[in-house]
Length: 307
Image (cartoon, rainbow, N blue to C red; front, side, top):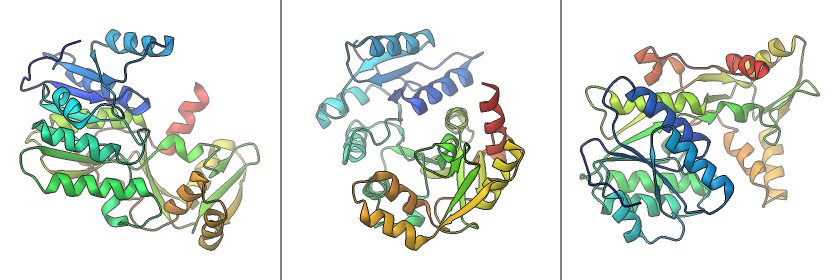
């Protein structure tokens, strides 16, 4: 479809994966009962049945679909799409490969978008710094440098930590429910901040609607901030019995990562085995300051059990 003329409230969400759909839901819910702002969603063109179902699902929610390809389209082509919107929210993640977030940001700035929420829903990249072993994390710092080096486009970075579900993802290996085992990365005192996609969507909508407007700031959210010891306690309470607690030392994690250089999970475990940058105090977050209810790890497990 053709892009709409830019209005003061037109919004484009890039991507409709797990987070993108949650952000769309958050924006639509926040706008209900008022004059809803025009909401559009950028998706890659596809003729697959799954792709058509996703398009219809988005339209059923009251949003419209714009087609573009983050990987194949040129910066100029993407900028011509983005230029129609006053707010662009990037929910595409890292699926586009190295350089994609720099490319998207370049196109956003070229398009003179009024307000941009980049894909920064994760850790505190500035505290962690460069050289973490996660090249995409270094790219996130490149994006921040690009945004701070200009003044035309306002930006909001939302740091939400890890998805809550990832705490319990078997491939990540922190919690093994069948063996009643919890593993700590580096130290039992190290902490993680986590937020569910649904809460990120709800909080993103609230952050964008906040008065006075939030401009050129990093905003922190947290569904929960807990140490590995507290995670083991949560799992014990959930299972109703003691769990085996296994510490994966930093030396072991470094060895695992070095011996399996192509194993992204090993690199990810090592990156999160730290006492800075991957956790922040929940009481100092946007949701705490605004009194917005969110889902902690214990509640998440209880909800998952009921599903």
